[in-house]
Length: 397
Image 1 (cartoon, rainbow, N blue to C red):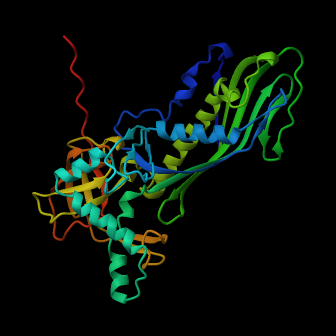
Image 2: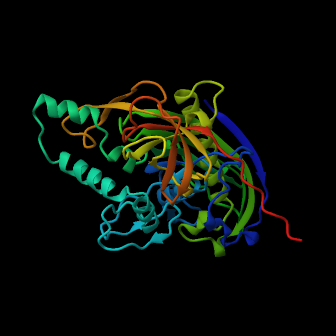
């Protein structure tokens, strides 16, 4: 699918400020609340670009930086930061969260651990995490052990994000003067023309890209926003004597906005494809979003369950969810997590409803409601039932 966009951007070079470094506008905010999905960032491919002053700009670094920023700023995503060995953790918003060196689960911050401890789940989570690491090192040969490993839900299922996003910039072209261009396309680098006079007048630019959305466990593609094409009028002038050097050629000119907007369109299309594939036609992000149960104390109607999605995902007290147990099978059932996931199947119907009681950055505690027969298991699928309407702030007298 090819999306043709053309936006007019008549921005003078002199008016560009450090605001470009903050990141793009991201996806347009919906009137309806949406929860963010935690995603891991994959590779971003692009090619170096030659400039009219004879230098070359590291466009792969520009593309990677701006792609990461647009994912972070997008209303549907949180960026997953892998655990750090020091025992602390780093939040999705990029703010270091200091915790004790003895942090038993380093991918969580102090507030997450305190929340688990408050509800008596911390020891259980430590045991599950340790068991998962041990299982990856032990060669399990008995049929009983293999069956148990297949039925159980190792902690990687809720310690890692469900999705991995990456991109390839197929082409980038910026036009200046009479038929002069810079950038690259499917045929390789574009020969940079020689401008006449003491300044270069840019007129328009275009970027083609793909966004790849992979399942982080099966390693298979879920959505591929291919053939995304974004073009814009980018009218600005640069004097040859004051030509931006290196990365500043993008960061201090309107061309950065072109790259960010192209990534935004690609991410929006990837979201549409993901919803259509996982939830169906005419469904919404609310239908496609999911989380997974982390801890299951002896469940009854007065107990609580923890799942991986907190305030960074936009979860609020009073939000309601459904729970459905899952069966996970791995390509090699003796090596869950280190082996790709072969498939996931629902294990029966919805087993319970949850109502959020409290959330930390990465974790939510919810009270179990309307539990049917059976028990909630770690790895159970969490789906949105109802998101509350935020209470508007009171107006000052």
